[in-house]
Length: 462
Image (tube, rainbow, N blue to C red; front, side, top):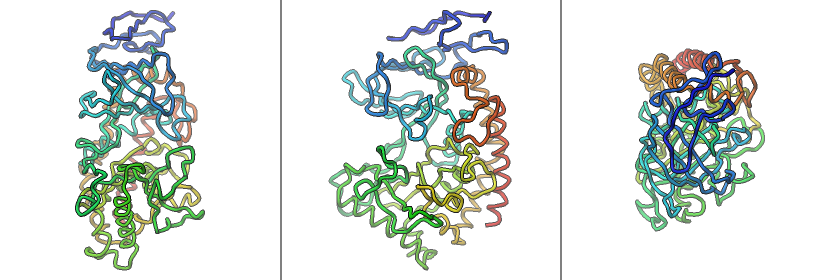
């Protein structure tokens, strides 16, 4: 018979959790040992816990429903308040473990900027649900690496989530990408800024699937269409830059004309015979260092979605176009079984050669940039510098080990996979199927080691 221990928890305004029977889904302070017995995890060892109460309502994909939530850290309630919550994601919505976007709200149900888990104050947040990524770590790892190398990415924390008294697994709590002094720190372009310097920024654009039921629907209303066709595409695909901020509803005609002309001029300069000229070529339009860092993060991880989906660009006032922040790497680090997404020995930016019929293709930018000796030299130097620091094998593997130790100490690995029994089974689009959590982590670590070895040679040979 399964052993059982009873413990007390902080009682929140709307939640009381008791470990009363073997069938209870509450694992807020318990984990199973190797014999299947429930043991108590000390409060200080637990992951931050989100307790969400929807008052019996079902969370859907738009609109957000009203709910309340409480955060418990080390047994102490650190936040309690209102929220609006909805399901988020695109292809990930096929999975039973859902990701959620939520807004923090005040007593009048208006948006409220708050600090959660020590992150800078904001109102928009994400609870990302790793499901096909059975390591639970890919997004958490790459975002931390980006921040470590000086490129803002969403801040993240590993957490556990309960919805209406039911445990729903390990989640990554993270910031939503948006213009903000502590996130994407660019000018807040207002609708009356339509001339002179005011018109030059800030803009946020995305290469991504379109919103709505038709993910391939693009028009002059929601996006800019590239004037240069993607290389190697075989189905007449085009590249589109979606308006994100200002979005399609808020951007003025003058702002739309400015950013459209800027993107067209940049691409024309990059495509021209004079593209390497520092005065009239591409360098007049882009922040080269940001392009190189974006390139190396995507190549390091062989992000199969890289450069073509979930790809953000920013243009601040009186500044050049920048790549990033990075976003959505759950299929990276060898976790995709298509288009060589699991390979350690291919260039990610040459995706179009391998999957020329895919709807979403990589723009011509990267192949063209690699034809400029000055760009390649700068890229090589940056790779060498990163390999001695953020991209060193020992640094990355130690990060992974620390994450795993954190999850193990909290009993969160067993909790998650007792709830979502996916170990040893294929979940789209797994390239590797490990029978245990440890084997999934070992695959991730070995994949990184092999990728670094290949990248060292490939970058050197550019």
